[in-house]
Length: 136
Image (cartoon, rainbow, N blue to C red; front, side):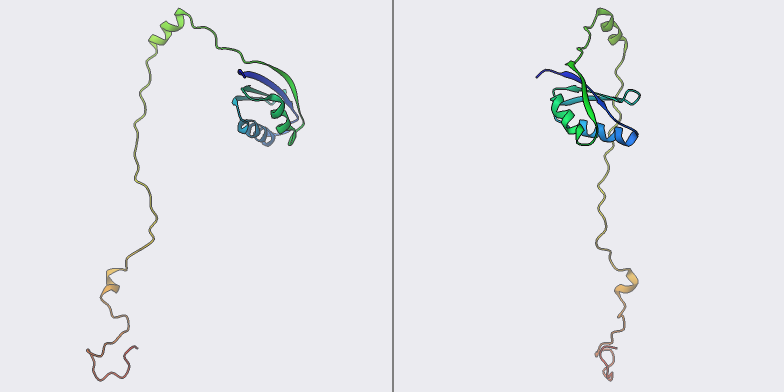
């Protein structure tokens, strides 16, 4: 299949409907570009997709009908003038690539030094041999 342009008329009322229709059309296989005209409520889709199946998908959510299907317009042939303008245009340098170290959450936090050496309420028999209670 060669590239084709399909125009579908949808019954849309707000921006949420527009977003939903464009999301459905963008997930369809073979779609190259999507344009939406809210004034006329028309969705223009170009690509190698099947416009009938696309309309069926859109009809599950909206009232959709196919207005026209035709070949996509080809890009105009380049002239000698366009070559001259390309020579004048300098390519912009790529932005620098910044590498960031990955963030790993801390799962183990060591005890503060004040708790390392304390006995935390434990009395050993060696320190006080007359102690009746080993663990207080």
